[in-house]
Length: 88
Picture 1 (cartoon, rainbow, N blue to C red):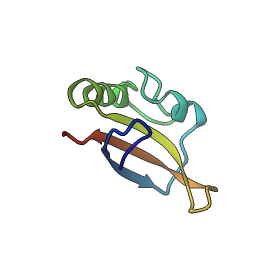
Picture 2: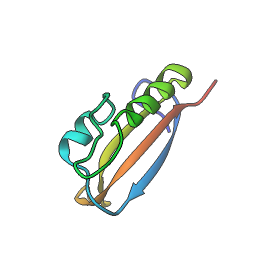
Picture 3: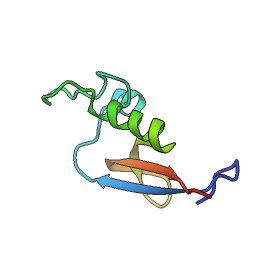
Picture 4: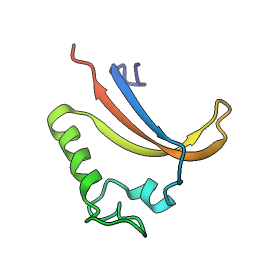
């Protein structure tokens, strides 16, 4: 795929049709301590750590978003998107 700047990249999307993440997790999920769900265990730094590695070592991004259907309507679950640039 090509973005508006002409950079080429590949997206890997991982969908979950289960519990929808809270809005603050979607908005701030890749900041330290922000991914700790109410009933989850852990420190909440895992997603931030992985996003940092992708950004610093591979020039990629990791995002979390709500799932949508073909018409753009929100459907249950979430999508994690891993985007990596294609080397020239």
